[in-house]
Image (cartoon, rainbow, N blue to C red):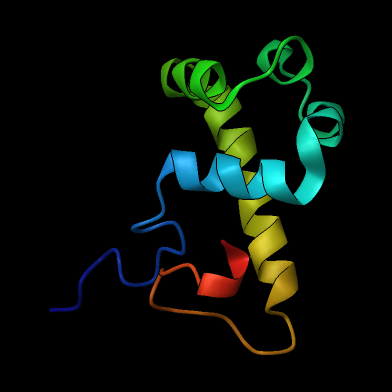
Length: 91
């Protein structure tokens, strides 16, 4: 039987990794514009944002969706990555 997580692109990717990638890619200002969450716009930090995202499912879903769009967009021409692992160049 196949592992049900093998097709999940978020399998093995932590929330901290997603947030750090998005901050590196967009910066706090742009991330706050794309996802209107107070912890991204007022005195942002990874620690406080992670605390909020872990307690707030709707906000976490928005961060995950943005992360997936970024990753999928980056690999459009190369095909999808099925292993669920984040390639090193995205880190």
